Length: 265
Ligand code: SF4
Image (cartoon, rainbow, N blue to C red; front, side, top):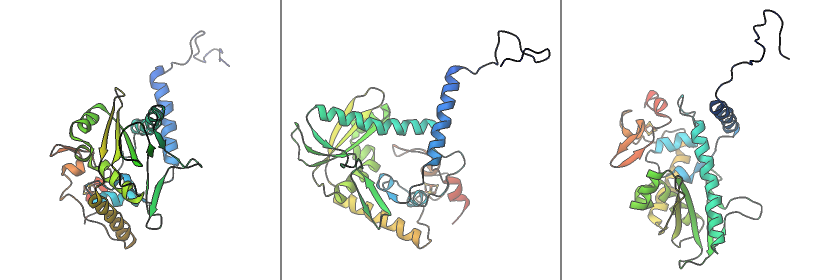
């Protein structure tokens, strides 16, 4: 009820000043997304999606769910991008299906296909598997899809996934090995800005798969023994730690840099 008593400060016909609608809506959504993210249980296994990162110590921090440095948690904007990328998979899968591909993306119970090793401490979930289709290629074939911003997408188109995004190539090799899908995988990259779709075949790289699998074993065994794996940098000013371009490759700032270099050795 509006308080019109003398001294209330209320001026008839005016309400409390409101923040601009764009800011108010974004703030409400960001608050909800952050709360939802905080409520999710931390991962308790080594994920195939990050094993190709340069630094074993960083992979170990992630596996052990070591709290990230202040301000390094996922920003609401990043949470939105992740969710959009996840949903982009459904869009691209739909395109394949109307084009006549038999693409399997989930089990009858709705769960994703994937693998578990090391008593559940190493896991990976695939985007899908092509069983047949109108395009001449070897079936069955693993499907891996990424939604990328325009500049990353152009890098992948220009250089191929194994050069432009080795972390994705490592993930693909692991899936091919653990799901016994040695035919060339079909990798697709969706340009988030233009919705252009890039497709390429990724040959099975058994050496890479073995190397990544060995890394997972190292991370789990060292963590169980209470040992830290080596850092991939010699000081906190390394591009790998503080972020930036090095040798034509972009590195995001490490989310554990303060912890890592504040707790030497
Ligand atoms: S700060 Fe650098 S050395 Fe330490 S975990 Fe991160 S990337 Fe590795």
